[in-house]
Every structure is written in C-alpha cells, then in structure tokens.
Image (cartoon, helix red, strand yellow):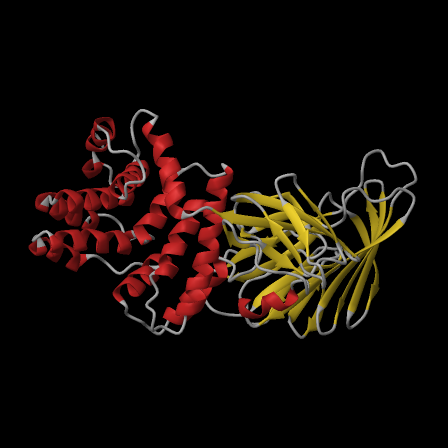
Length: 472
C-alpha cells in the first residue's frame, strides 16, 4: 500500500509533505494551496516523522540531499546538500513553486534577501511569503503563466567537496502592508525619478555597480548615495548572508518618453491605435514638430473599424482637438458596443467628455445599456463613477497587492500593458476614498518602473504608454 502524505499543523495553516518530499502549503484564510518541490526529480525516502517535523534523505543527480520540513511559528524548509569533490558540472539547487488559480504571485528575486509573495487575485486577505533565510533566491525559469516559477535557491555554483545548508521560511501575514518589514534594514525604495539619488546605509557593506552608476560615500556615517541615468540598473550588495540583488528603476519624465516614442513611430510606415494616440498627444503638447506627414499619418488611422479601446480613445481625443461633434458621437457609439474589459470605463468616460463638450450629449444615452463588468473591469467602473459597493475595498486591496504595494520586484504573469491598465485604475481612485493614498503611491511606483523600462530600451511597445496617457 503506497505511503500517505504527512500533515503538520502550524500557526499559518497546514503543511502536507508527500512521500516523495514534495511540500504543499495550505495557508489559513487563503483559499487554494501552494506546492513546492525540488526540480529534477529527487529520489527521496522518508526517514523521520513527528508532530512538527518530517525528514527525507536521498539523491538528486550527483548530490546527496537531506530535506527537513518543520513547523512552529513559521514553516521552515531546510536542505543539507553534499556536493561531490569533482562534480560533472556547476551545481545548484532549484525549486518549483506552483500556486492555485485563485492566487497571483509577486517576486523579488533578490538573492540573499529575496522573497516570493502568494496573494489572492481578487480579494483582500492573508498572504503567504516564502523568504530566503540561508539561501540566494533567483529566477531559473518563469513559464509566464503567473502561477508557476522555478527558483534557484543557492548561490551560483556550490563549492565542490563541501556540505551546504540551504534554508527557506514560509509564513502567513495579514496582507501586503506589513511585508516591507521583511526587507533588509538598509533597504530603500528602488523606483526613482531621473535626477534622484538612491540613498541607503551601505557603507559597511560591499556594493558592486555598472560603469554608468556613481556611488558616493558620506563623509561621516553609513549612508551611500547611488546616482544613475534614466533606465534600469543592477546593483549587488555583498552582506554577511550573501549577495542581494537590487534593481534601480530610474524613470524619465513621461513627456520625454512620449516625445522619443512619437519620433520613432513617425519614422515608420503606418500607426497602430496605440501609436496614433501617442503621436497625437505628442503633437498636441508640442513635444514633436507638427508636419503634414504626421497629420497625414494620423488621418489615415481608421479608428472606427478597429473594435479596439485605444482606437476609440484616439478617436475621442482627435474629435475633441478638432471640434468634430459627429466624430465624438461616433466614439461614444463605438465604445458602448464593445465588451466591458479593463480600460473600458476610462475610455467610455473620455468619449463621453468629448461628446458632452462638443454638444453631442444626446449620444450619451448609448452608454446607459453598458453592462456591469466583472473582476477588474467592474471595479474600474465603480472607481470611475465614484461608486463604492460592499466588495470595493477588498477588490482594490487585491489590485494594490498585484502591483506590489511598494515592494521591490515584479508581478509574475502580468505583461506591461496589463500593468499600465492597473496603474490607471489606481490613479482613478477618488481622493476621498480610504485607499486613495496607498493606491496613488502604488500606481506611482509601477508607473516609474514602466517609464524606466522605456528609458532603458527594454520596452518599446506603445500600448502601455498609451494607457498611461488615457489615465493622465
């Protein structure tokens, strides 16, 4: 008869350890579960079971590994790795993490201080945090589905002929608000505007930076100032527990990104709806020179046949700029016929503003039959209308958590356009709402990250910046 999993109860919920060594965490108050297992198929046997501990021993390729899962205030996962004197290739330990569909994940692959946060996708609630204790947590592979990630949990290449201890800690916390307390004591926010220094008490630690980054030590005290041009920059902080990776996102002003992107778009044939919106804003703001060629390219964008929210946003703004009443009325009609998805409420509001301003208020009746959206789209409708329901607070908390609430790192499985849509939603939160301050600071950080990626050239798609413009 096959062996059964062993269940351990802890303050955070329940842990099940399979005979194969796989670990399943079922956090209390968080629906679904999170699975953790060593990559590569470890050949484990169970050697000890008690009320608060399960131990396995076995092999993973050339490695002899002992695994210990114990519970108390936290759940501890510990591996003792014996590396042969002459390994065939550099050795590392990888861990697969898989979350249930009800979850989303935020990752800081920060090495010695890295952490992974599993949080509810659509509700307020507790979060599960998996944190490096005696480990260096980095990404080995991200399948891109947002619920699965393969993490390397050891430094690059374990030393041959030695025994290594690797340890992670899992704990459940009330929400994302308290997670900044898990960051290293020297940590400072890593999303900056161009010209701002990053200041941290690092004088007693080693800091390795690229040639474009300048490190300045204070005459007295432990503060270090790091300055860098706009873009994304990597720092390595060498501390007693290992190397912590820090990524600085230095954001160019939005106007600079719009101008630069518009120039590139005008140098190519044809414009997408996103590109047309960017170019239109650049011309209206005087960021690029108005030419017959630019106007002709905008005139050629057939925004009415696209069935695309950004196309209608462009049509609405073009109608407003040119005083085209019929064009504004058509924008209202077009948006009223589209499915309610994220971004719909803000584009509908933009089209309605253009129509009302240009004397086409009679067209607004078409918006009366727009259905109530679900999920993020429904939340956006509430926010834009300034209308709260019983579920608004929890839904907003989920969006704030999805964008990290000020944590370093990035959301798994969330592309830049989707991030920009969530930024716009949070920016639209009315000032008088209790979530307004946290929503604004979270949106600002996420926006700075996107603008830094544009400045570095890692992001060239006009769609995210177009959505930022729709919101602004």
